[in-house]
Length: 382
Image (cartoon, rainbow, N blue to C red):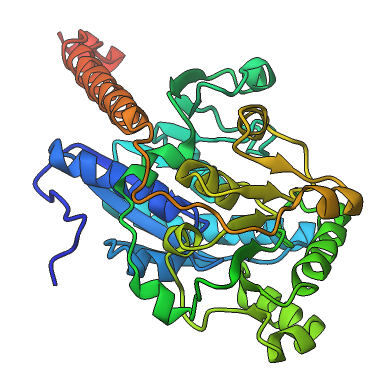
């Protein structure tokens, strides 16, 4: 089967993309496709964490699985970072990329720094943690994010219009087969629920409390059915054990296979999430969405909240007052959303690669034309 994002192996302009979390798959997929159309080659590595590999298969990406997640414990995180970095070194040496890009892959940053590969980091949350000794060639972020908290990176900043999710949502095509697959009935109020990221550095107990309140709120009415999308198998088993009664009654359900989250959300009536990406995907689709994210509120979420596209929840009282369990008046088709961000990103990446290749050629030319200094022995012989 021909890969949807077929590579241009003949190109000497190669970009290494490392995907270490599931939201990175839909984000980078159209970027990869556009780069290939412009004659670029890509090499893609993916970490086996939070359905990243499964989604890469779903999107039919050409990738190499390397490494896994090592849990929330700080020591294990650091050890895992070092171990995956070691795993990535042979891959990077063999691939010989011109540029390394990711949406915050610390392992890739370490390896690229050691091998002197220019590094580009994408971000859409300004309170992200990164590697202090790695100097970034550039940072890419939505224009709505203030740069005042990013001065510490001492990096060139490239901005693009809209939000990260606007890069790939315009390519989304609803598929009604999900209605049968997930037993979504029109007479019910259908909810998509994404639990908090229990192993992320920004995870808080406040998010867990809100998640409990949300479950209580959603399972009280008879006509509400909630599709829960856990982040990993460990979280799935914890939730199934804790809310066993609600699963047996059919009020809560977890898909048996990886599903296209955009499609599930499109055919739901509201979305509630303890993370950032799914909230913003729902906002980009126009679906009513509520956030139970417990970390610092980033500029993107503030922007969406101020524009009425996202409702932030901070307490149990707000859950019961603000979460409206009503049918969504779904439009006949997806509204025309911003699609300028994709071209902006690819244009800037192309300019960066051109600049890097030009600088390398100039450096080689200068070294070639440098006058050779004869040794003392040679000088005496003359």
